[in-house]
Amino acid sequence: MIQPIYLDYNGTTPHDPEVIAVMRPFLETEFGNPSSSHWYGIRPKRAVEAARRQVAGLLGCQPEEVFFTSGGTESNNHAIKGMARALKAKGRHLITSTVEHPAVLDVCRYLVKEGFETTFVDVDEIGMVSADDVAAAIRPETILISVMHANNEVGTIQPIDEIARIARQKGICMHTDAAQSLGKIAVDVQSMNVDLLSVAGHKLYAPKGIGALYVRKGLLPEKFCHGAGQEMGWRAGTENVMAAAGLGKACEMAERSLDHAGRHLKAMRDRLHTGLADRLAEMRLNGHPERRLPNTLSLSFKGLEANRILEEIGLEVAASAGAACHSDTVNLSHVLEAMRVPMAWAKGTVRFSTGRMTNGEQIDRAVNVVIKAVRRLRR
Image 1 (tube, rainbow, N blue to C red):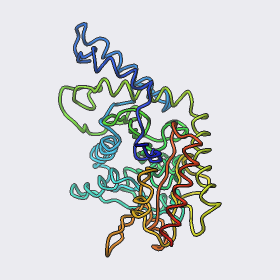
Image 2 (cartoon, one colour):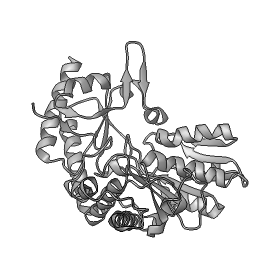
Image 3 (cartoon, rainbow, N blue to C red):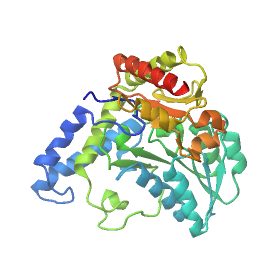
Image 4 (cartoon, one colour):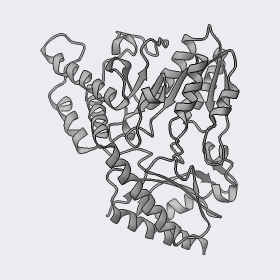
């Protein structure tokens, strides 16, 4: 059986062969605990610290500002809960956007139980957060702003540097979730002016179950996990050496090939979009037409249902739905709802996302598969 063409890189990425090669020794022979002072712990310890330097190199920060976590979700939890609890004496008001990942939205909702309040700033019809709207939401008791760098569903890139500048002027802590943007576009914590930034390894050709959190030097979020004091005392638990080494290698690779990778992702994405747009009517693009991740293509097919489209193409193309349609209900993604995409369009939304391994022949095949499927369903 021929495997379906993979166009769901925003969902997860395959392991890059170079990443696998770096991880292999820690699966086979280098089993030592990096906290051990004896011979068996030396190489694992060095591997963790090398990986920390590699992540820092991609983010433009100091190695001691990088802490390994179990993934983007934990990083977001650590950043938001940690800073909210650490700063609660100054205020209990948070600001985020309506299009954040659940790992941010649900954390903010959870903190209501601890007496915090969150303002959810709306986006426009292309999924963009206005820095002016964020500024208008600020109160004297605002202590933290969290806005994602780029949206995982439609790819819109947010004006993080503008929002962070406002936060800095007001003395407010600024966090961004960069899970989707890292490795696709430039992510530099200094130019972005952020205080905390979340990383997810499996969006970057590294393993699942590994991530990182950048914490600007001088900040003291409340500890998320207590124990033996690993990760410079910030996050207890024996380090996942193999996965950390893989994330470090993935970041090193992303840093050295960022421009080339971005051009390739965009070329493949645009080839797919053009191929479909030239032959299909009643199809619309979601997200910013230009200020968008180079690999992300969210398309709505008017009058159709996303799950039916995916059923039709599933044996040949792997993509993801923006809506789940059932016999009597349609469950839209919160992102499409926030963007106020009309139901006739929104229910037929499919997200395609290209990756490093995508090639032109695959894209051309995918175009033909999707066109045939849409035409069949419309008949």
